[in-house]
Length: 319
Image (cartoon, rainbow, N blue to C red; front, side, top):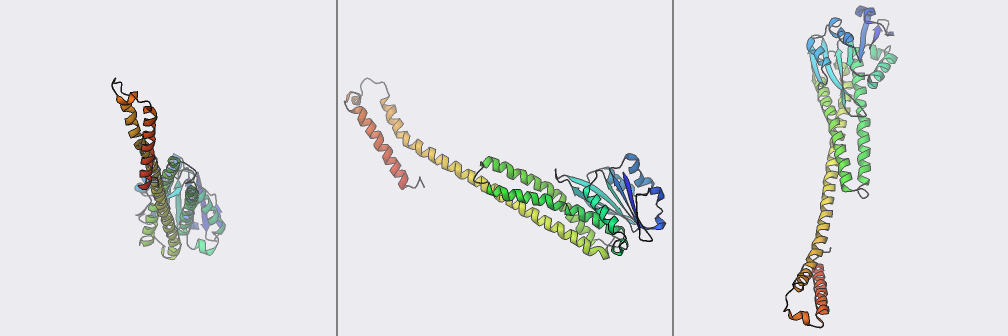
């Protein structure tokens, strides 16, 4: 699907015209959005707009890393949207010149729709139409970056909840949840960090036309990405701390169990020795004919057990 928005010289917005109806000379600037384009529609990038073949090739082969390229009077940006359910990145390609903005994406994105509605509602205001396509490009990227926050906030809520479950669930279950959260954070990192690097390049580039008056706006996006990166790293450190805590807790529990089993085994070792000696089937064992031999051996075993328990207590084995 292709949709168009044209800002006329009378500062009125015209939406829904076909490409054939748009005469670039009669408009201040135009936004053309390719959403889930067909093969025929994709060919218009070359046949109608005459974009550089390398840029068109990048549009056809997803998923590209966020980047900024310069082709004569057109800047080509690859940015990423975020699927809130799977945390997978969705590529959005932007062609920016001083007369038009072309966005290209293989899935319908709510962020693009929100940016479209915002520009359509306010395009007749001077602060929008005078800034041209770069203002629309900023709005698109701002919406994309804003959509990163809810996913990260959700993970932070799960981390806070996970901290409170430490006394109620098994260590194995807690470890599974921690590693699942770390995997999701890694997915987010693969989207957020490249976008941060891209925005840094945009801010420091000397080739982006008309960027000077928009620097404050792109700086705002960059600040959001820095905040997201800081939150992301803090959450990764928290999951690492939780992982180490659960591993230590599990080790302490295992040590406690092993110590208990060791004490029990050590107490029964001499008793087993005595029982083993008197369990031998020799004919001439003096104690076997003693009238009180059975009770004497039981008493000896009891005294040995008590003595070993007392000795272990003094050694601090039960602390």
